[in-house]
Image (cartoon, rainbow, N blue to C red; front, side, top):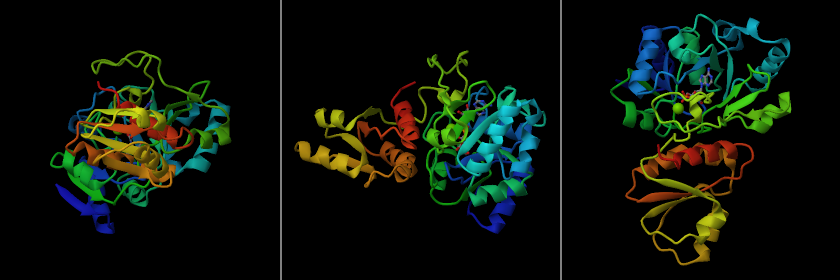
Length: 344
Ligand code: TXA
Ligand code: MG
């Protein structure tokens, strides 16, 4: 396996691998993706195999310009008002951490979309990702580059630790800037639904197109075997993004009132909450991490998976995590923490 820093040479090499049906892990502004040529069903089958991902969980199709949208989606099936919303979203929020669920173009093989009539399409903002996509033929199917259900990778090293040896190349582009996955927005129905909270806050979407609903399924009791009927997006699985240590989420007031556990790790959203916890009672030698000293959500989201990757390797019994404020990217952070707290 090749493990190379992003450069014009490595990008050319990576694109060649994709064209030949191979798999390349590459950086994006959200998390690292595990890419395959979106038009090559054999290559996509390998993605499912390597990730041990259930075949019913569709992949996101990555493009590198809005023109390619027509190659991957069938816009003729959209109602006029939906099309208007699509262009507003694409003009203002692409490239960026937003995946739009649209009627799929027939050219995209069924395996990529798990047999759905729709495809989630994303135009990432990361320059290396854009170059790779355009050099490789214009459309790259890529889930996050981690084994199914485990923490998403925000560094090339995370990919190497969990998938190294199973894929053809890892492109190292340093740390992901946003650190949580893209927002998945379904604009195909009458009401517009957020299927997964992510890097594009709901508020930014609503500013452009008005109210959107939380599309979370009521029936989330998924047992890992079959897709329950109410599940619009498998990313809604309650238990997901799990670190290998039990994690529980709390408000800061709750963490302060809990009995202190010496062999637990404490993950705070901001420095003032941590200081309040520290000064409330005598605590000795706890493993403490703070996502953002000043409580900045972008910094916190960028560090979230990275910190969880670190903590899952520590000798601790469990992780206590403070929830973020719910506004903006805080919704995505809390979504990941809450799912990490539920055992499958
Ligand atoms: O930020 C991201 O989105 C990253 C980077 C690599 O772009 N990718 C990513 O992919 O997070 P993945 O496969 O880990 O998550 C894709 C999510 C899943 O929850 C999947 O169920 C949902 O998108 N999804 C994909 N296609 C869909 C469709 N046609 N309808 C509904 N949900 C879909
Ligand atoms: Mg994923």
